[in-house]
Length: 278
Image (cartoon, rainbow, N blue to C red):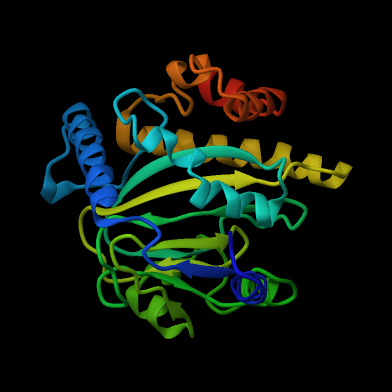
C-alpha cells in the first residue's frame, strides 16, 4: 500500500510514481507476452512498421496468463482499494503499443466518477522519448476546468496535437525505468512527446463503486464513452470489435471470488453487454 506520504502526494498532485515495483525478470515476462499479442495483432491488421498505428488489446486472455493476473497482484490491487475503497472494481486491463505524440487530455471529465490508472511501461522513458507528462494538480477543480479553457482549448483543437504545444505547457515528465509503475487520477491532464513506434504500456484501470445517484449516472456516462473509444479503436486497428472481456476470463474457471465480484459488477452496469455485443 501507499505510505502516508505517498498517499498525500497522490491526493495533492494527482499521481505518484512507485519505483521498482516489479523486478526485471517480471518485466521480461510481461514483454514476452506483450510481444506475442503485438505480433498477432500486426498479422491481423497487416500493418507494417513504416505505417504503424496505435494498437491495443485486452490482457485478460489465455494467451497472456501472467498479464491476465496483473489486476489481482496485491502490489496493484491493494493501492486501488486504498484509494477507491475495498469494493472498487476492475474495468479493464489492456496493453497498448503507442506511436508518436499523445495530445493533451484527461481520461475523465465527470467529477462524480472516480477511477485510477496504473500505467506500467516496458521500456525506460524520459522527457525526450515519450515519458508521460502530467499537469500536477489538474485532477482537482477549479484548476482542471482552467486547463480546459487554456488557449488552445478542448480535445479537438489541432494545436494540442503538436509537439511544440505539448512542450510549452508547464508539466511534470514522469521519468520511469523498467519496473516502475505510475498511478494517476483519471481527471488529471496528461500527454506525451517525442515517443516513436512501439512505446509499450500496460494499464489496469479501476473504478470506485458508485454511492450516490450522481455517481451512478457518471458510471452510465462512462460506459457510453468507453464504448465510443473502443469502436473508434476497432475501426483504426482491427476493422472489427475485439472482446474487451474474453470468454475464458468471464468463465472464471478458478472460481476466484474477487474476479466474480468484478464480473457481476461489469454485468450490472452493462460494460460487458456493451463491449461484447456491439
